[in-house]
Each structure stands twice: as structure tokens, then as C-alpha cells.
Image (cartoon, rainbow, N blue to C red; front, side):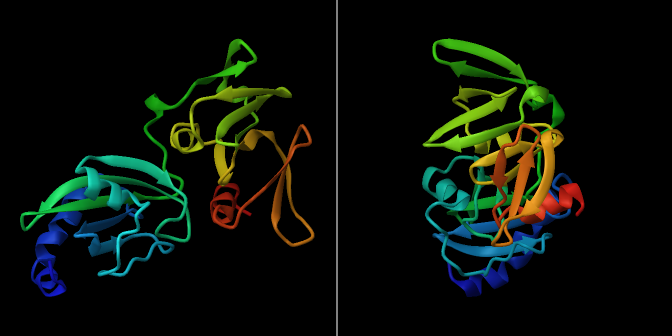
Length: 223
């Protein structure tokens, strides 16, 4: 599909936006891709920008939808934008050609409360222990495994950080590609010698805050 045809059909593509506006947040974004390039983009978030005509990255939600023709959703680190994002991709047809409609939700997006985790079951050696979410201080991704910590004990879970991020209560916040913290366990936030932010938990554990997540941390804690 040529960009000339895209301009002619812009009013048709805008209909998707009008329909979706009834149920997505105001700061969500919408992208449409056909033939491995983006043909439409509308955003409500100042950190998200995408050029029409640009190629679809191979590790993006849009690419997965185009390849599988199936709905795909995931938390993405920064494949398209400067900040991590949660996206849902849907297979659509545009002028008879296979396309992908991707809804990019705000970085702090959470699923509805009824689907939130109330506890995590962790493994220690040969035992499985259910731990209340409120008792978990932080969660870590290390060596392709996920670990969570409670009262000084370490537990392993098969759930990835990407899955956990959207189904944990609002007091849990992603601060790094490897860490999610429980805000209730923060002792203080300071800067190291290179001016990077460090979160110190009440048990003395210190965790770095990556540049990709610092804006989210500031927004939630209002500092």
C-alpha cells in the first residue's frame, strides 16, 4: 500500500480512533501497520512519537501481530518509544491487506482490580510457599528467572516481570528492567556519585532506578 493511498484513506483510519476513544484512556496512542510499515499514528502521550512510513521493528507488538494474525499484548521495554509501554495489538484488514492495529496504553497502566494478584506462590528448595502481596518488598529478574523477597527470604516464581507489572496493586512500581518495588517498603531515594537515582528499602537493600523508569517514579511519588 502506497503512502498516497494512505492519505486518501485517512478518514477511514480515523474511524478506528473514534471507536476506540470510547474505552481507552486519553493519553493512550493508536498505531496501524500494513506491509511491515506504519501507515497511521495518533498519540495522547508526549513521550510517544512515531513517524508514518517508518519500518515495523521485528521485536515489536505490531510485527508479532502481522506475522501471526492474532491478538498480542505485552509490556515492551522501549522498542518504539523512549519509555516502557503496555500495548495490545489486533489483526485487521486494510483494503484487503493484513494489518495490525496497536493500542499503546500509558506506562502506569494496570488491569482491572479483580484480576490483580493477591498473593504469589514462591519456591524454596523443594517447598512452595504462598506469600501475601503486601508482604513482598521487591521482585527481581535475574539470570532469566524471577525472584521475590519477603521478610529477608528469597522465593522463585515462574511469572515474568512483564506479566507481573500489569497485575500488581498500585503500590508496586517498575523502576528498572530487572526490578519492581513495593513503595510501602521504601526507606529513601537518593543519588549516587554519578547522579543516578538509588532506592533504598527498609531492609537495607539498594536498587538502581533506570532512566527509562525515572519519570514514572517521579509521577507516582510526586518529587
